[in-house]
Length: 91
Image (cartoon, rainbow, N blue to C red):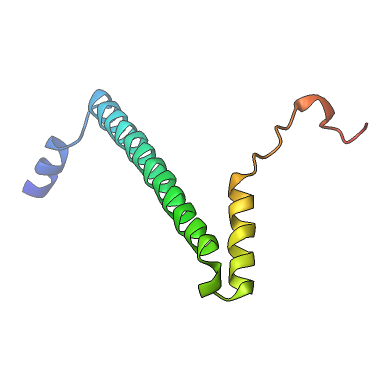
């Protein structure tokens, strides 16, 4: 019986749930932003190492160097911007 009383006392109001939800949403947004920053830093660090491999290509297998060059080219290529004009596939 005492357990039920404790449970009813800890029930949250709509406003409390809404506040908790908003706090979690904001925390999630901040974590997503930090993750994006870490991903970007990681990508740039990887590019640094790829360029170092190309600079010192004589120390590496030629297939590995080619793979590194291709990865650099892919990372440096800006993807084409898709427009919504031709979405039905007709030209």
